[in-house]
Image (tube, rainbow, N blue to C red):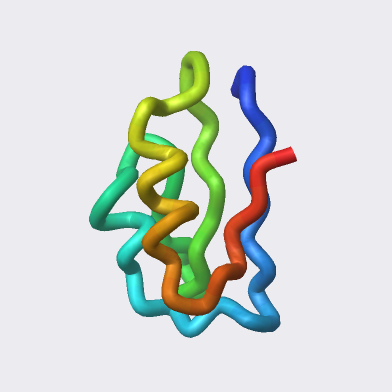
Length: 62
């Protein structure tokens, strides 16, 4: 179970993969090529960096 809540707006996501590159603990690819939020123990330290560097500004932390 994850201790943080992040979501990716798939309508605005351009699937560039920067979030996955910067924070693979929190993000990954689905089988259909969309970004998914991964389950992890605790909030990954890299999450804020991925949010700040998203060119589509489509990642939110709740």
